[in-house]
Amino acid sequence: MSNLKTDILNYLESQKVYGKNIFFDDDGIEFKIDKEIAGEKMAKKQSPNNEIKISQKISETKVEKTQVLQEIETKEQKVTQHIVKIDENSVSKNWRDAGSLEVLYDDIHDCMRCELGATRNKFVFGTGDPNADLLIIGEAPGRDEDAQGEPFVGRSGKLLTTILESIQLSRDDVFIANILKCRPPNNRRPSTSEVDTCEVYLHKQIELINPKYILALGLTAADTLLKEKCVMKDIRGEILDYRGKKLMITYHPSALLRNPNLKRPVWEDMKKLKELLVN
Ligand code: SF4
Image (cartoon, rainbow, N blue to C red; front, side):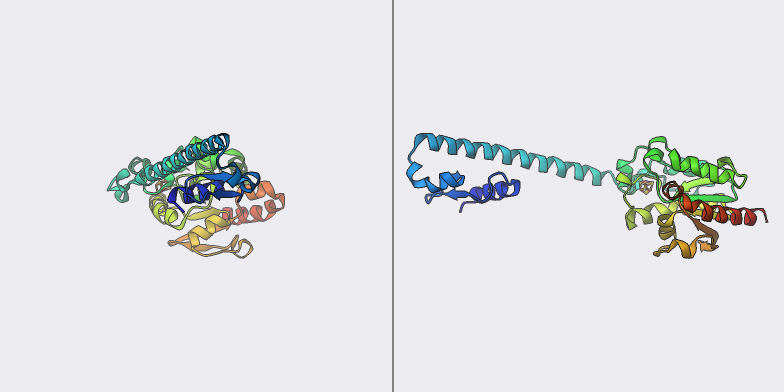
């Protein structure tokens, strides 16, 4: 069987256009489709009308195949462009020497060191008091954060504001950031390499802010920071260690929106955190 016929068969099969009732003539030139045509193939072989129909089918199939190949080529080009956009030189060579959050922001806000840079709308550096005693960390920006360039906005963000107010803190009293500075498409979990590439910026932020406590929101953030699979009921409210800093984990505000029963344990964690902060 010629390569062309093999390709056509494979293509039709993959498209499920004609099922499996495709037959090739012995001379290897024409092919016929459909059971009825198959049953009458020798009788109709000489029919001019039938040959025209078959030729038309072949032409249509070739056109469809060409279109599919063009689509594949376009997708390949997009993937190539996407990969090309990863650029180690998109940040200042001296970003590790930044002496303030402002300088750090200037150094890294155009970062394209992982592929999330190519799909983000806005780089989400973090906001709040650069000398805060409390650093609040989520895992990565979501849709609203990506659109606005700020962490914890939208419904979860409003609830976080309310949670902070319950211990007499405002958003301006703390610093709020994410482990990753760019949104993973469709809020998928970031890959290990994306975390490894981006987490160094968080390390630098911690060095500059030098908070007394870090509060990580949600199990995913906990897993990512602690590099292990955590169980929320085992770790929440405990004082853990993250790079020499005291770390507490509690539920993510979005979990409270889904399950209001979690408000009580979060309230208990926040009360404990408040006591630690003032002492
Ligand atoms: S996620 Fe982090 S490492 Fe990746 S492009 Fe954004 S800022 Fe750079």
